[in-house]
Image (cartoon, rainbow over all chains, first blue to last red; front, side, top):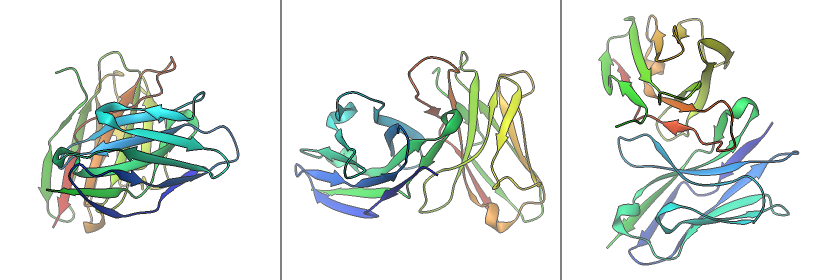
Length: 112
Length: 115
């Protein structure tokens, strides 16, 4: 079965510093990967997705992710974070019928 | 606002009571998904509909749970005889049934607390 593992449960980071959130997936077939962000008391918002093609995917709010098939990873990065990036981030893989399987999440706390 | 809406946003109930949540998807979206998110975890798939047909139910959906989408528009999720373990955020998402966007649009969720 396809699944994702987020390797960090919490990532504290200073404002304007870079951040990387790690996600590894397990799949034996073509894989579609997503990163979602969840702000407090809100639903999930799509940051970016990998379907095929270029392995470097750019998303909203300055985020990008790189699909690495050999390392089965899909890490999310941002070169310079803002206070407003404080949120929970979820990596997800698409299952059959477009259901999503999510990782446990990474809480990013940006400090001034 | 034309996004996915969910009501109520918060629900506090006593163990053993029945509760019902509503989800209104984006109007042209045929597919509707329910997920459950417990504290410190990612969302877990519960069930999904294509139009009014419920096509799949997760093993997480015990017989105390029932979901409907009577006219292929809004959906309800009912939990009977609630238990403390049902406390969670219940998320609804919708998407088009065809096309390559692959994106599910999520509502703000209903947070259930069972006392």
